[in-house]
Length: 365
Image (tube, rainbow, N blue to C red; front, top):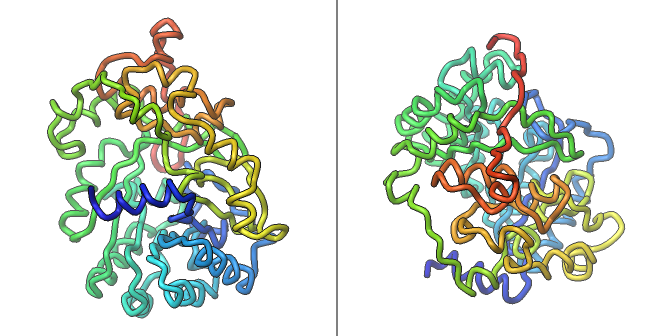
């Protein structure tokens, strides 16, 4: 067992929120077509409020802290917040589009000891990436920032979110990441908006395209091993949980709202009304979430994919049932193995479309 696995196991057993994702703003200088936020900055927490939240997280034992947005660097106090978190010995990751990172900012991030800077890159082609972000010149500026960060030995991870407009560029983006000396992550999931609007999921790739991704060595490694079904589901799996959301992970919005995860918009409390400790340990929503084990999932507990499914309870929640299946993850398992999930089988082997219709974006179609 790795040290991180051991930390997660102990944190789960003791109810410690080991990780927190803190959005310090939803404002952004890009307008990505698939973004799940509304970019309203009214009512954001002040610098003092955010520092108090960070201090509360330290008090309950949080160690890993992701600072994100929106675009966090739009806040003039972003570096002040980062400095405060590092002074409290948090392991800090910064999620940013990086267009505001120049040589000076890269040096400051290195001196702060930021663990990693996570950046989304949608294509190696400016006309595609910039059409998705709706910010002319954004790819050029993002790549320049990555080079500044790497010059200062700051770890960088590129996330490539797959959509109907850019899925053919994924291999080239990975090759570019290797050339830049940064990590590469591929993500085929389009998350519904936090207000429940699912219209942006139409941007997602098709089942055939997802199946191709699952069978591409550059993305999954040994294809035969990755796509081989594993049908054994033991008590250890059934007695466990779907993911860390609400168990060792919490998400905090720029307005002090607390949720299990950024993809799990179940309200649990607000930090302007209660302390984080009180919300984490006493919120009825968190208590209910932690009572649900895999064996309590009415469909997924009977599914042959359970041992390796990436089921997201937040996506299931946004489909109306926290204890039910996530259609996006059922589709991933089907694309991976060719075997219908329990939910798909119960629907008469009808595979729900990953997207419906074509969404027009200027510059792409």
